Length: 477
Ligand SMILES: [Ca+2]
Image 1 (cartoon, protein in one colour):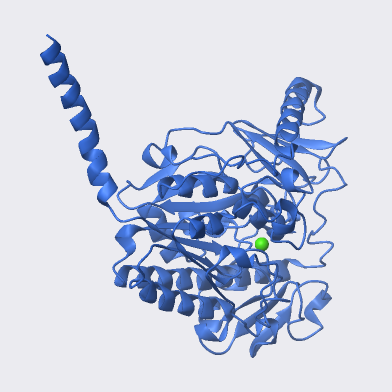
Image 2 (tube, protein in one colour):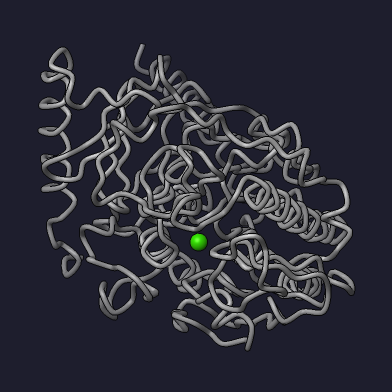
């Protein structure tokens, strides 16, 4: 009997160990992290856009898991990237504005790429990964608010931005289009540029990525390569060929609902409206056209990087992630740009391709904050203590799995989103939307007495969540 028990036990041990042993033998995964700037999911074919041409990103979506409900933690570049790359909510670090997040977390916390670097990976950055001003840092090829300790090597991609030769135009605060040419700075300026892909920052970024990917084939260690594209962040500058498929007058604006603003609190909120920007319908359509051209340019550059990965023979051994630092308004509620915490601004595109995992669509909640622990887990690195993201890797094996029941995002106010309800909290005022019945957020139920209990329940949950994530445990190991 004892012998039988020993044989059974031994068989179980061997059968458990055998697949593990095979798994252990595979080479460590490389990581290719591609991040676009100010890219809303609604502009991508794989997220339902029927006009904007994004064949390369769409293909990637069919090769990995496409997340339909992934959210950023801040609807502004700097704090969103700091949160994603250091693994903390902006409430914990108080990271705002022009920062990498390093000064807020201190010298003893490792960023996501730094964690990989310390665990045997070669880590590299091309262009904007931590925050950089576009076009102020990008045009001259400056590092911006980078975190040098995160990288073995880092490359910038200077570009002429709104000074590039071509057909330039300023769309905002230019009634009748009287001022000619593309104004500089962080404005709604457009240039249909002369010259090729490589005259601009994103073309240079793609070319450097191709070069590094081929070079890394000969490395004696795995790589973590972060590739940052700066479009479709304004100025909307792209080679002329990417504008060609789009005709301004044929661009469709989101529906303009009469009285849409009557139930949106006046302060704080996003004030970048068609009215404040003084953009007439024709200028709004031109903006959408230029945004789509910029997205198609990023798509083509993403295709180049993916082709290099395939040609170098490393695709089967590389985790590929594609995302953006936050979403963007393209005229919904007559809003433009970011900072708002409405759906289009807070939701991000997110595709994660892991070798040997089945392609899928996942509708469970994910936060950009989850990338650090999740990719660490997929690469069999430990997950540092006290990170505030969650390991969602089981959602890549089973797209119906759920790790989170809510998401938290900040901008002008705080977004607390559950499966059915979205609470946009501004302190004394707010917005409440039934995301099942009203996914475009037209009817604010916040002040409707029938929903008072829902509002107070969500406000209490938000308060609890904020207290939980605001605890400053950054010093603890
Ligand atoms: Ca951004």
